[in-house]
Amino acid sequence: MIITLRKTAVGGHRVTARRADGVSVFVDASDHPHRVPHELAHYAIERELGLEWGFWGCVSRGALFRGMTVLDGMAEGAAAELSAEVRGRAGSRFDSAEVLVAALEEVFAHHRDLMPQAKRDKMVELQPVLADAPLQRLDLDRLAAIVDEAARTWGELPRDAQVDVVWSPAPSAVDAPGGRS
Image (cartoon, rainbow, N blue to C red; front, side, top):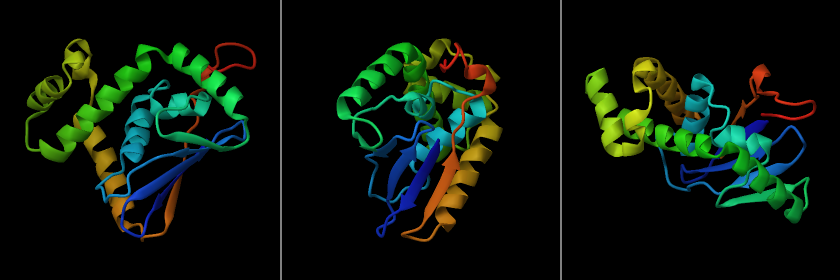
């Protein structure tokens, strides 16, 4: 799937994605300036952690979320049916990825000076559902560096320009002939 993030004239962004099945979707993003667009942070963090059922993994399989529109390649009814199926299969894995990315974004933006364990504690304070998550396994320095690189790339991008990134499922994501996990 090709994800296109376009920096707008005011420094905000617009996001589209063309899935492997040829369907194009529009993600209603913010037109306000950001250090790192939320969708780009999702991409960087989910890719690094191998979160196949995070936002972009679900979108690549056909999920649609609030504010998303199918631009072309599939009828509205079929898109809604596929989306419901994918979201059902994703279950709590999607929610877990969403809260993890939100907590990481907040910690990297406003609590960078904390020691690693204090950052993990802050993540749980921000998102209590993470209390039972294996946060000790997260390399917060590596994740911060990846988000910083995304911020640098975004910051250097001129207005009215775009960056394209590729989301591809891991080879192990195939769960049935012709299907994706």
